[in-house]
Length: 444
Ligand code: ASP
Image (cartoon, rainbow, N blue to C red):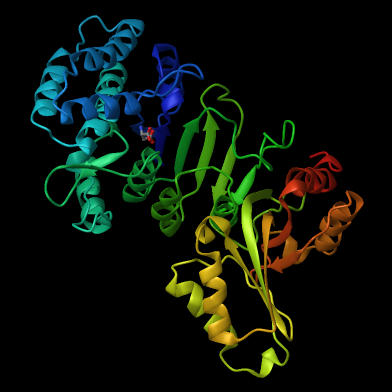
């Protein structure tokens, strides 16, 4: 039988009612054999995530301040869930006694944060009747803090091979020193992906509180369309350009195994969500032609002109060398015969702009060196672009009609995206007009 690994995010498990929804989803499909829970998230917008409560509580413990009230508040969150689920025989009292003791012993911030998933996993395991597997026994980090993927895969496979079902809490594992270690925030996504890769799942379902990824940011475009299918590469492009989606590291374990990820909504389980699929030439293209639009503000364009620049061997390298020495990453670098532009994130220029100018002058003696601030970059991403005529024409027509000036154009060599630079003040309008051009003119 095919195996599905299902990960539920914090908002999907924030209270008893949400956990009941998640349980119904799990029980509705026997292929959903391995469950990766997050810690309880926010129940309402001003609520505090249990992970954050644990960090604050442990900060008190570390300073030698009494943390009993804060820990009791966390216990109350779980007790409310247990009561709401009607689990009369179940209690986490012993677990909380151990946690209090370990906090006194200063067991570490990461241990503290990991208890959110650990305790939620205990509840969900008992509620579903699925055995509990402590992530610290099956997920391992190397001494440099990076996941030990070989050791982890062997341990997970060995452990799960005889288990019909299991609950494996997300977010943490065991560090090389034997202590609990966490992924970065949002890391339960990564655990789900690792488990899916290890058991060679047919699908990794990632249940959250939205019905998939959206074609554009809903804070900019009203009620944007959902992306039905996106490839891993497109997703990388969109997330790099600011679309906040899955944890970045969650892509790799499933991508290498060719396992698709399905983003689903716990509150609307009938909706198909977004499928993230391996890159393949025959993947159907969206009716909108483009897959998504994302972008970021706060860039600076460094414009450098020098007559006969093109015949000065190593000119670009010398400019980039100055940036590299200053640890400034380069985002884009369009060039022409006698000039080049380097686009960089403006935060790197704070306080060093004058020095940087001097260093570039010294390195390449340009005729002109100008810095233009307040630039926004936006990426129009879509695997269909390379096969469709007129995509660039439509992007620029949309911008021209909206009277938006484009200061830089960069089409990635993969022909998967077109990146344009506009003034920050035009950013939102630019996204809206491109969205309207591609999405509002088509009904899927
Ligand atoms: N609970 C952790 C966090 O809040 C990890 C996760 O939810 O994925 O970041």
